[in-house]
Amino acid sequence: MPLAQIGQYEINYVDQGEGIPVVMIHGLAGDLSAWLPQVNALRSNYRVIAFDNRGAGRSSQIDEPISTTDLAHDTIALLEHLGVSNAHVVGRSMGGAIAQIIALERPDLVRSLVLCASFAKLDPLGHRVLTNMREVLEWRNSWRDHAHHSIQNFVGFEFFNRERDQIARIESLIGGETRLPACYIRQNWACLEHDTLNRLGEIECPSLIMGGTQDPICSPTCTEWLSSGIRNSETVMFEGCSHFFLMERPEKFMAELSSWLAKH
Image 1 (cartoon, one colour):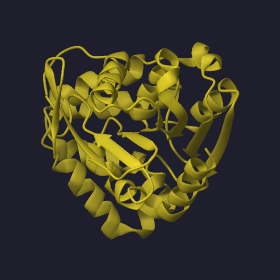
Image 2 (cartoon, helix red, strand yellow):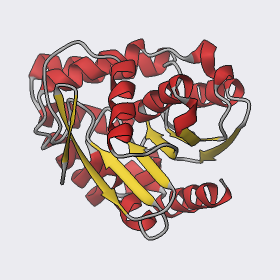
Image 3 (tube, rainbow, N blue to C red):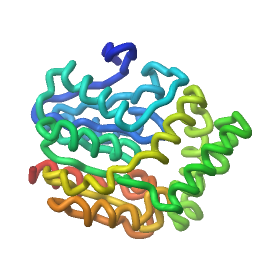
Image 4 (spheres, rainbow, N blue to C red):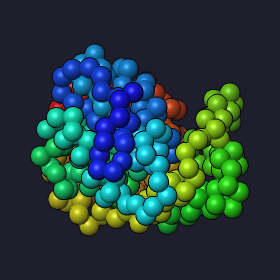
C-alpha cells in the first residue's frame, strides 16, 4: 500500500477504482482494513479511498496530543495530495466525527456525508463506555485484556449469544492489535472531547445517518442528535444491532450505502 507524506506524518492508504470518489474514514479501533469489504464492493463503480488515520495501522504512530480536528486536517491534506476535489465522505464512529469537521471546514470537498455509528457529541453513556475501555488499556497495558473487556459493547446481545465463532474472531482481531496503546489513548480522549453538536445546522450537504438500536457507544440518543441537527439528512436504524452493525448486518449496510451513493 502506498504512503503519502502529510506534514510530518506518513499516511498509509488504498486508492482503487475510477469514478466519483468515495472516501472512507475508520473509527477509533482498527485501521483501514475495517473498510476492505466495502472497498472491494464499490471499486467497480467508484474511486474508493481508505486510509489509516495518524496513530493507527501503518501510518505514523506518535504519542502526542491529538484532536478530531487534527485528524480532519490530515484527511483534507490527503485528499489534496490525491487530487480529490469533491467526494462522498463515509465515516465510522470517530471517522464520522472527523467527517463532520471536514464538512464544516471544507464543504466544497464533500458531495455527501455518510455517518455510521457516529456522534456529534457523546452522551453520558457513550462517554462512560469509552472511558472504561480506555482505562482497561491504561491499567492492564494489554490489547488482549482490552478486547476481552470491550467486545460486549460492539455487538447486539442476540449476535453476541448466537455468533460465538464471530465473537471469538472479533475479539482476537482487537486483542492482536499492534498499534501503540498511547495512540489509542490519545484518540480516545479526542473522541471524548469532540463536540460539533451546536454546529450541525451549518452542514448543508445531503447526509445519511445510520445507527444501531443497541449501541451503547453511539447510542440512539447520539443518532437522534445528528438527525435533528443536520437538516438535509436521512436516518436508518439497524434493529437489534450495536456499534458494529456493519458486521452484524453487512448485506443491509451495503444495500443502504449503495443506494445512497447511486442517488447522490
